[in-house]
Image 1 (cartoon, rainbow, N blue to C red):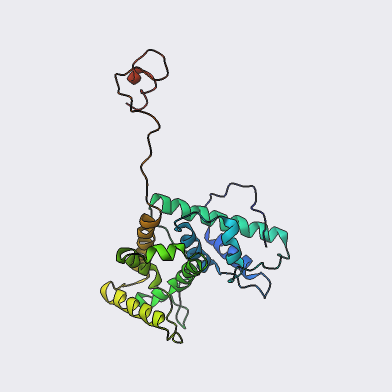
Image 2 (image 1 turned 90 degrees about the vertical axis):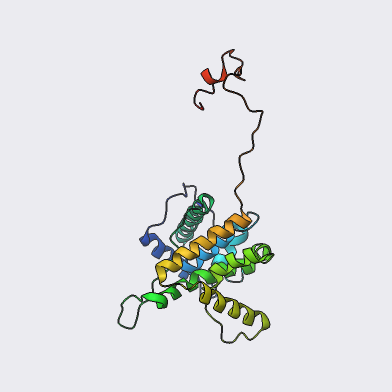
Length: 251
């Protein structure tokens, strides 16, 4: 499936209603597809944006609509496909702006409730981040360059564990790697415990920014020419001093 991105400004943040709309659109795909839900999509997009090299939408979109990244059947409603693409790219661009600015963001999650319909509180509420972490992990599996770079040293691995600590435990995974991950998660939770969902969200977004500093470090702007002093002749050739010409807005 390869619906075209609509020719609109894809910059507006998603409202709560639009988040729910996007989730419904994704789940409306044919039954033989395995699309991400909107919370998993959010973690997936974050991991895509943290990749050492830019991943084009044409490469990652198939994994949004099907877990294996296979060509999914076409949408029954072309308008629904276009709307889904618009909402996905708007969230992608919103997350990209937060990560570029190193500003915390609110992950898309669904808070958990008890049997009486009341929102869970305290440590029990933190499990709401599991789908987000699963989406993040699905991007690492599809595009392993990020994982390979973060496993290169201990500091990077700590940043990654700030996200992966929220993966649900797999009781059937008795592999050596699975057991090692379980031990690392247990140690992380022991050394850096989280009191509630708000604290967990803050730590999660901080971990994302730590990863961004590793894989997408900020670079100072490169000067395209020699520095011009305030009292030097303006390079434009006016004959006036730089500070009285094109440098006036700078100085």
